[in-house]
Amino acid sequence: MNIYVANVNFRAKEEELREVFARYGEVTSVKIMKDRETNRSRGFGFVEMPNQEQAAAAIQAINGQEFQQRKLIVKEALPPRP
Image (cartoon, rainbow, N blue to C red; front, side, top):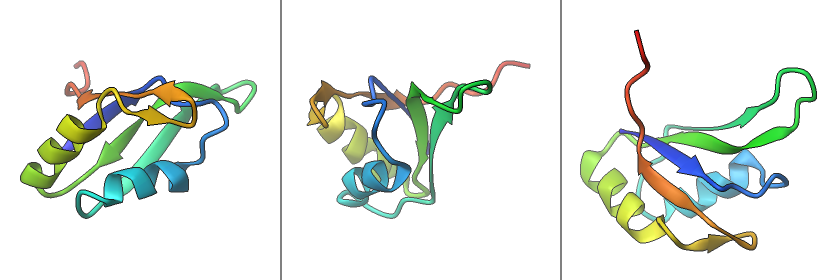
């Protein structure tokens, strides 16, 4: 399942975010989106977890929790627009 994560601290590293989600199961990938011109974090990203049940548990547990002084917004990512 692809998971959307918003309100991520601009200083957060992908590996730190991976550790948060790995408590609930296997994490395939983590990508914090960056501005093309400045290469600075845009404050959101995506986490991929192959097991649906583990991903659902992670969403339920992490949504609204504080991570690096910010409350994360976590939900299933919408499919890309055509």
